Length: 126
Image (cartoon, rainbow, N blue to C red):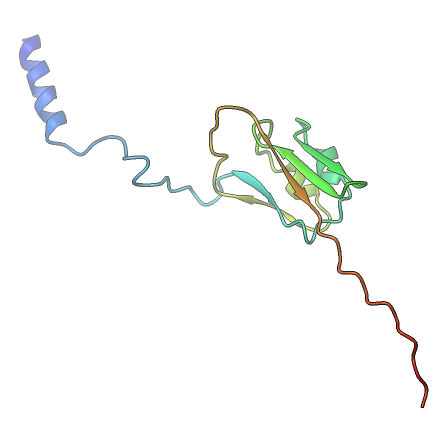
């Protein structure tokens, strides 16, 4: 009887739809409120460091002197504390995950320097 059950199962598996999806060809569709990867709009960021203080794993580092914001993606647990604590709302959480890699890396964003104001040339009074 077990051979009959095995054959029945095999035929059902051969002619039915697969239980998994073809991963690289068909990307994953995330549900609406899925937590994912943190993005920073560095132009809005004031480098206050509140996100670094709120991060429970210490994945975020802010250096005001060098004007950099760094995140270690594989240390981040996607809890959203940094997004909620940001006063300028420059942090957002996207519905995607960090791409796997052979080693742990960190992503550093540098705040752009404002353009230098032109020096006031001698004004002539007419």
